[in-house]
Image 1 (cartoon, protein in one colour):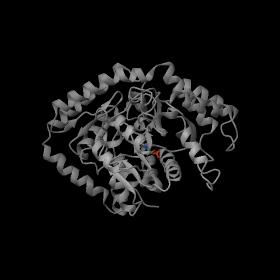
Image 2 (cartoon, protein in one colour; image 1 turned 180 degrees about the vertical axis):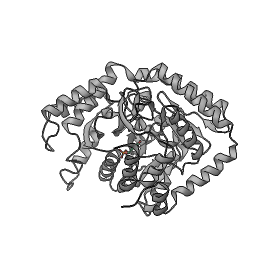
Image 3 (cartoon, helix red, strand yellow; image 1 turned 90 degrees about the vertical axis):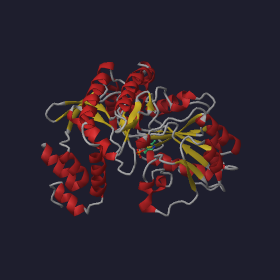
Image 4 (cartoon, protein in one colour; image 1 turned 45 degrees about the vertical axis):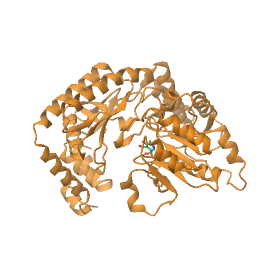
Length: 449
Ligand SMILES: Cc1ncc(COP(=O)(O)O)c(C=O)c1O
């Protein structure tokens, strides 16, 4: 399949607006990948600082992880639900040994949305009659119908309203708002310890511990969504490791968990919470089970990826390399304040907060032309989206410098354009998303099926 045929197939069978973007931006088509690099069908190399928003944490096609995955495929890639498999047991034991307190009960699924939803069911069951769930505005916990209730990004929820009416959204970092929303006690607080997505934001000092203390005092369950932050991305194995006294009741993990070798998500519950759930009469026996989640294949990948991170101290490396990356991004923010408002983040979870989505697209497209992939938010509704720089934790100083050099060239070029052109193209792109599908097909050069 050549590039044109591939884009045509994507337009027909998947997403005509994405196909149009691929065509207009002359986006490359990925053929293979290794370490921090992906290669297109012509063999051109791109540095992957998007990493599917943090999935390829140990580098693409990490040979150490691949060897373990292949060995597992040869033995038993899948096992019936409920079968005790040594690879899965070793993986669960490993997670429990890494997490604080009595976070030791592992519930498997395949996607982040599933574990968010599974956790909603658990907290509503355990905390009945309490039903109020407190969520951070602009947070992201997945898009299945249940998880949508918790989605802090309004645009995703709007078409499906009315949703659960007992969900309260509060601004990230505002402890007074959190206190007000929790009141005498809610069922749960769902919190990304570092707010990810297109709104990347680190918390003010004391915010996470104060929220944890509030939850403990009011009997509110604390759910830490570490789907983006975990396994070294933020310079620690988990973002909550920064706070020795913070003991969430549930931790959600996915994305980097297998280094991109298999899809997997887990909700790790405290033993105390599971005991409370177990004591509830009338709950179906397999109330939190997933038949396809947690296969030996996925667990082998997870175990190998985590051991690779540990043995190479990639989380510590992320801290050091992240300082270099973030310093470079901050220089860009200082030099081009009309286009770049800030360079938020920590370690290798960083980005550029930009003037508007058109600026984000212009920088991402410019970088792509110079052989760099950055994590485009694909969020035309965020007023000032963050273009993310989430390289694999195996990235080198030289690769970071190469990206910063490319960024300098791109910004230099963009700064010569009149600012109003970005504002106008921002309005045009917003309208593009609202075009009728038939017109999109036409623009994308795709014949509808
Ligand atoms: C913090 C967070 N939670 C949940 C999710 C949902 O994960 P999934 O896309 O696998 O459903 C994501 C995905 O980006 C995420 O970043």
